[in-house]
Length: 79
Image (cartoon, helix red, strand yellow):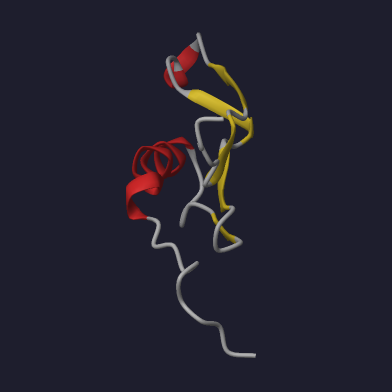
């Protein structure tokens, strides 16, 4: 064994949307189900999600969560 440990899991649902091809909304995406994401830290047993809704918020969350998560595994918890 090489001693690798999985520290967290990142789940991403890309949502369901269609791009409009006609009219004044051409090129815009109409969402039936917005994208969403969730990060679960397996060390400290916490779950984090994006602060907002929509593809931009999910993209920023996915790009930064691994560096911005502060693991509390070493901290003692109050009962």
